[in-house]
Every structure is written in structure tokens, then in C-alpha cells.
Image 1 (cartoon, rainbow, N blue to C red):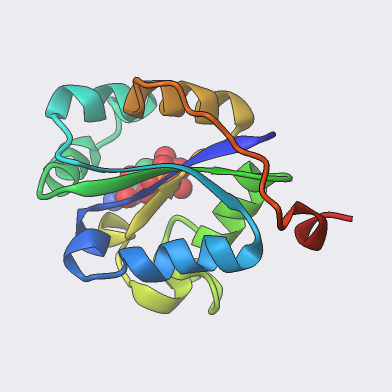
Image 2 (spheres, rainbow, N blue to C red):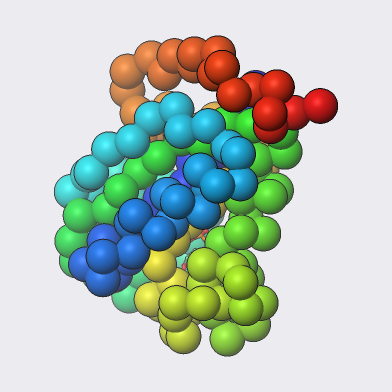
Length: 148
Ligand code: RTP
């Protein structure tokens, strides 16, 4: 089963949007495989965002992401990496379509509420980074109601 790492950033947790974000993925039919409230260290975030280290916004990104707890989740299902990012909306919330999480709930790119892995490879890297324990999927009884 394809898996992705979805994270509610500190602003999303503080604003009480965790439940709404989880509900959207549940209603879509994706399977929640793991969930944690985490107070991320700078070291963990530097590894997560290693490819952005040279960007001018990196210091403000670190300040933002260490400002409070985050909720890390693993979701599974058909094409969940690509569709998960569609559900999040464009990185810049002003360009995010209405109906997406960022399109509905935020304005600034530096307060864009949530993260979603951008490829299957980065999803597996991020899941290993944020979840040390083994993640076991169970076969849901509703599977025939979700998939043809
Ligand atoms: P994410 O990893 O959070 O899902 O976002 P993304 O792939 O769509 O975008 P990426 O370019 O990887 O940027 C990661 C996060 O950095 C912040 N950012 N700020 N001030 C800026 O110009 C700027 N650009 C990006 C955002 O919080 C973005 O989600």
C-alpha cells in the first residue's frame, strides 16, 4: 500500500485544525496508519527540510516549525502521495484552490498549516525519520466499500 507522511504544523495544532484535517483524509477513504503529537527538535527539522537549507526562508521556517508541537501522521491508500498534496493545496495558500486545506484555512506561505510528502521516496524517508517504531497496517473491513 502506498503511504505518505502528513504533518499538521504548529499553527494548525494551535488553531485547533487537527480534527478537520484528519476528517478530510478519513472521509476520502484513506487509512490512518500512525499518529503522534511531537515537539520536534531543530535537528529533526533540519533533517526533514535538508533540501531547503540554502533557501533564504530557511531560518524563518525553523522558527515557525519549532514554535509548538506538530501532529505527524502516516496515511495509506491508492496514490495517497499525489492526492494528499492535492488535498493540502498549493504551497502558497493564496494560490491554493478553495476546498483544499490551505485554500480554506490560511493565507501566508510561512503559516501554511500542513506538510505532505512530495514523492513516494520522500514519503518513506520522512516516515522513517518521524516514526521509529514499525507501522503495521491492518486490513479494514470497509475496503470493498472504498476500492472497486
Ligand atoms: P511542505 O514540504 O511543507 O509540504 O511544502 P512544499 O513541499 O509544498 O514546499 P517546500 O518548497 O518544500 O517548502 C517547505 C515549506 O517552507 C515554507 N516556505 N516558505 N517564505 C517562502 O518563500 C517559503 N517558501 C516555502 C512553507 O511552510 C513550505 O510549506
